[in-house]
Image (cartoon, rainbow, N blue to C red):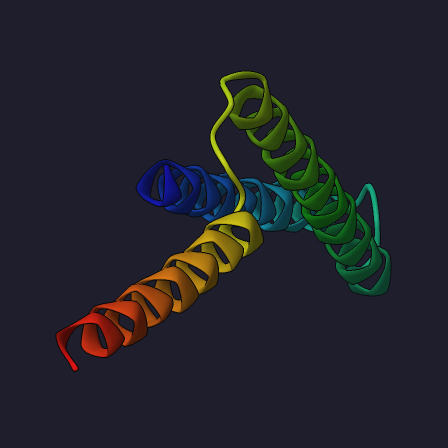
Length: 105
């Protein structure tokens, strides 16, 4: 599951990079055509890049929530629940060893 999330994150980064590059190309084209000045082009690229990054973050958060919900629906325990169970098992094993040691005496 972690691998899937990493792949999704990398796809998002790639998409962000491609869209930012396309925004730069478009802005450069508009500057050459005289439609906007270089300062406006830089602002356009900055705003477009920020918008794409914001949407990417929203998508990542949405996907993480959905994955968490699916795992919960499937009954997959969370990490803190697993840690708690491991601690309980360790304590029970220790108690069993102590009882076994007492019975051998």
